[in-house]
Length: 112
Length: 113
Image (cartoon, rainbow over all chains, first blue to last red; front, side):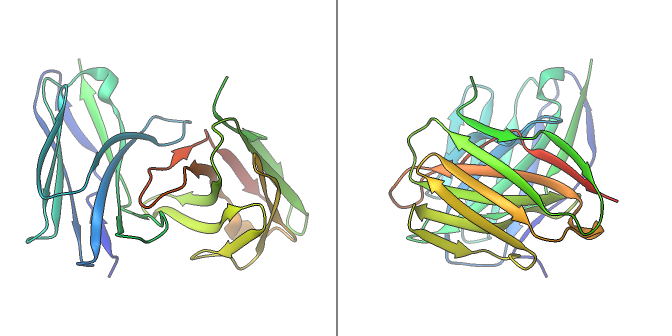
């Protein structure tokens, strides 16, 4: 069993929809959680970075962490075709020297 | 210009050949990483380096070697390429300090025939 599980999709939604992307994890030592967005033929770019349980909002994006359930989510409001990409969750324990464990990525397609 | 630059962007080669992938960065970060990405498997760490004199194996280092020529340069070599090393390869950097986020280059698409 992988330490971090992520539904690969593809997830197809109409423009303007609210998108929910999720990851579950098994290692209770994970303390820092990231979401990366990866466009085709590009490297992953950091989208959101959270530490504590709860919500963090940045524009149309909200990252949610539930450590008790070992579950993290990324919500995208008013989704746009430009949001079409693969979304990777990543996480690491405290003081782990930046060693990240990645989910497999979810491919999102937002149709006009 | 990109902060993390990888060369070449694409490479096709034959089984048994030696290949070097290069990474350079202008972010001034001490820490550098090499990953490979395969469909459905996410990113897996091959090697990482926390400074010029520090090299460490990652999750899947067999068949690979690295060289940290300078703070800004970190190269990955496949000594004798095999077809199952066909993948996307990414270099990343991060700043000092615990839990600093990583910043990625745009990758090298490597195909081994």
